[in-house]
Length: 347
Image (tube, rainbow, N blue to C red; front, side, top):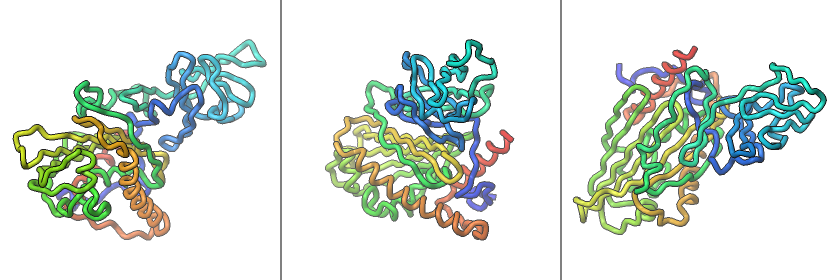
């Protein structure tokens, strides 16, 4: 049975997620000595930096009387609860109780491993004994001296995380949803190739002698007539997608292509919403001063569509008919089967 014909074990609109993986929790610049509250994987989390700049990520509830830590403040190397002044360090251990010299060992709170890389803060909320390496963004040009890269846009999406994951894997939608902005009407019907390697997927499209759209020309500074454009969508399941666009002018086919790479961390907030953290790397200088605004406007068209799907799912469930998938859904269907297996292996 092909991936397209296979029935999904996950339901878009209410899909669970694997926990034993790194997820993007925030941009580095968002976290300071002011506690940041964020719901991640259906769990309240508080993020902060102590006096040394060390990152902390704790369950956002004081074990004493249940006050959210995120409403407190950082005092030295500890996060102080605003209710009774108890203090907890980045390991989750209580370090100070104003009314007592003794600190019970059980006076602690769950702490989550966090790491920073290229302006992104990653969190591990699964089994700490299964802790693995961070995703390798260097393969996409991040951190390289000969590339230009930066954090871009964070969006809160009122939709299950599977919707943006599948949206990014399926370039065929840009012909219609982003009509004329980043496609001149060719992508939806163009052949593509899907390859799978473990929990990684890749979708390749190569469009030759293509007239470039206005936003593509603005991003790349392209002024020629036609070009060969490669669109490569990648997913490192469950939480990271990449969109790579390569442009080579037909007027100079021997020229090395210009590359624009979008990295997108997709982090479930709960089963009905998620965060979408984007960062950009490219082989040429940033020339579009409105690049983040243009990117946000483009992504908001995706967000509007995904949130419409989510609302209708919630309105009609459990009486929804099964989805009918077609050829362009091949990567999405394979991703669902891989995710279902990952979730089952953790059960």
